[in-house]
Picture (cartoon, rainbow, N blue to C red):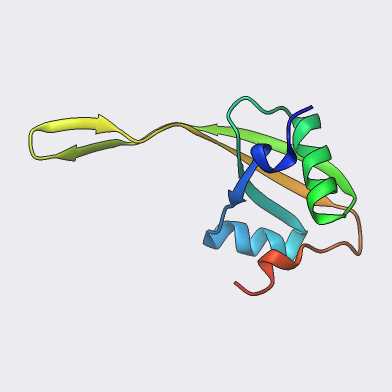
Length: 96
């Protein structure tokens, strides 16, 4: 099995993710591209010691970037939204 810290890369902080966290209890993370929902669920439960009810994932495309005449792309990444059981919270998001 993979190390849980290799699956969960970082929390994803945006206006929408913060609203979803406060209003609906969904937490958003950047995760490894090749991870699946069951790996994400077990990694979140192991790292933060919470119960996960549901996991949804999205593959985010890289954006086009340009520096002078040179064109390139930012890398693709994967986003996971995690719904926790009633009463569970993740403290990492509380200070933001």
